[in-house]
Image (cartoon, rainbow, N blue to C red):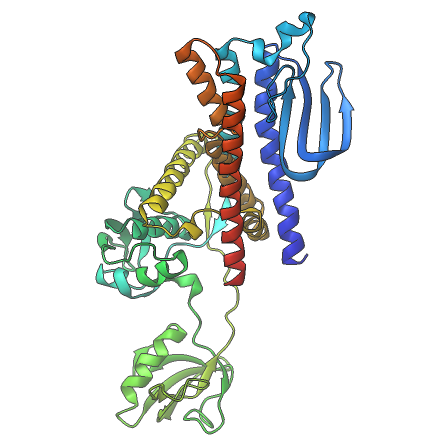
Length: 460
């Protein structure tokens, strides 16, 4: 399946699940309060499928799968019209219910998303999400200054436990965005637990996320490239001595573990006229003497400085098998899912705070359907548990977004009802309609920003 089709498909699946549960929250609360539900629709526009149940509710799947709605008897719509309510139906009318019940109906949608989020996290933990162990492969930048070393395993970043690389990378990115100091608990290659301290105070405000990890300075072990030669350039120092398939294990007596280890060692033996390169060739050890040449990297600009080179290129790295699983038993997964939902909610609020304070670029804060679809496709390719984890985070985001006090969202309705409680009477129809149009403009503005960010990422 192409990335485009995969992204579209998994986006539709995600929206279908999340919107259905959100609207079911409204539906169940309305039915519990005795409100007649006229239509339950997943999607907008012309219904593709519809049936009516014995209670008179129309269940529909519509053509535009970007949302949904529950239409109730006697409820205001955007144009400030109400469905006609006869005297016999007043007891089933939404707007004739006590304000407390109307608040419950509005809150039930986001609440259903929160419940779904916790349930999905529980399911993810029970299934087990395969991942990579948070073992350090290469260190520079802030991490090196903080005392991190190759082979260290990240156990916790601040208060966040990091059993896998995903948790570690998220916690490190958040700490870098906050520009503070953070303790990092590690287990060294010798098995000793220790605490390092990373100082991110010099990270510029608004640094794009894609450049943050360069400043953090950690390349995990599973992303390191093996020191295996693919090709030897004609006329280079390695011609006749090195060949494709050779694995370099040491240079001048210093062990080589990954491809990135080679360049500094070659730069060391170059001025001395060469040195010994220990290899594994066809399964057997071999040592050759090579004298690096001082030249520019192939394809480098003419103005670039020359460096000591062997004239070899690495093999394409194979996809490393995941070596860690984030999993709990069914009982342990209950508190774990609650903790994860709470942590992700805190991170979501922190993200908005970081964006408004300038710590985080706005383009890294909001994503539209394109960005969500691409993420859904990528998560789905990693397996069921990964896709479930994304659904959980999206469900949480949808619930929080709908509680924002913006008219046309559930939070806006709750704001209206709160004013009604304080005033002792509802807002005027004119005021409610004006607020809904203002809310629609704000919502369209957020959607436009999200689409703009999506397009920016595609162009980049």
